[in-house]
Length: 333
Image (cartoon, rainbow, N blue to C red; front, side, top):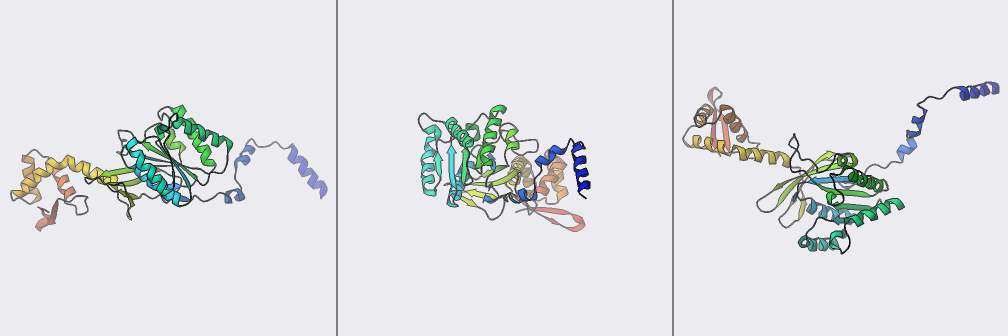
């Protein structure tokens, strides 16, 4: 029996190794997998502990007000929160300093301290990354990303993202506030400012879609674009005096904005149809004929009537009923 074992050992030494044996060094054992912690939300559906998340919005889209609020929540949950703001006016800085003191997070204003700037903050981050440590209880919020690096310069951005990934691997949670481009994508959705490295190097990329109201308040809904955790969209209201309220139900602000944009474009046709209705005509076929005489195509009249008589539309203008022989009649609400 011992002789047989010896022969097997000799054969094993003689047999050539597969050129794919190196892959075993990159596989993970069950025990190693068990040691990986399940992602833990600091802020449900927004910020995961130990991740790098970019929150992107148009200028004046509410991201700073929202994240100052979140900084307070995370601080109250026991995290050391450091909010670095290099995109603030002197007029706004005073109220932010007060808010930071009241809610227990640290507010860094590098551009307002003589002889310092965001480059000094980045230098300290590099030192932290090189020295190592456990940063699992630390949250950094950077407002905004473009103040840290020229987001258009690929090499600079790549180096910064590598630094942030290094800190994230040591447990730090990093939130990058960023701007959208002026123009939307071909799908009508917002596009982040900078190179594609931003999307590939962060764990989550979340857009904030704002809807501004005449009373100075704002509704903001999140639109997760890239996620490495399960994130559901949610909605916040920012009042005119900058109080943040999370809504119980999600509101599709992007859809509402698109509807209102189309509504503005349809106003002339809506006015034509209203004049026709005011004249006493109410059947669809009569409305279409009269609108055509005023230069509105039959296709457009049909679409506008259908859109703004829908009881589930964001803005309903007319009520429609079906009479004899499937005849549609319309009246103003």
